[in-house]
Image (cartoon, rainbow, N blue to C red; front, top):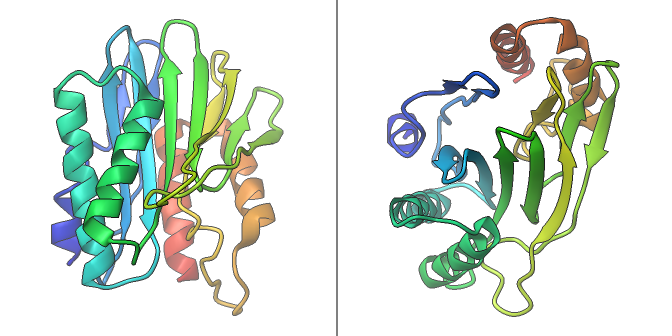
Length: 218
């Protein structure tokens, strides 16, 4: 199952340009699930990072994830310009495949490499966190309906500017819910504190530490 899910993920989990660096962390499931992430360069020196999570486990969520991953790839290959419009089209795809049985939260982070301007579109996704040179995190939340919403589908939107060495983290809501060895869940507060503590490390090392810490808590 992990091998199948990995087939819908980017071949490269690290992207590096003179002004932009991305490290993706993913741990394959031991059962069918619906977690998915993707990076895609867009026209005009932009990047989009997608992080999604289908409700539940089993072949149904895995099927929805596969359909969304394939549909998004088709959208980008045909010249995706408007990320919000892309989410609206993915909502229709989830409705078609899941027939109302499943929903998928989706975070779409669009970044302009030249200016650092970013836009966070939320389809029911958890808030993203930013980390500036001061070492203190900020929470960026915007409401939105998950993919697979039949009527009244709307995406939330918030935006900001990344300055040199600033960081953003996008994640599935399953991360703060990971159970620790003492039986308690990780929680958003500790998750954010871990994000802050990694501020002094290179991005690759910070991501490796985060993955190791999460593995120890499962």
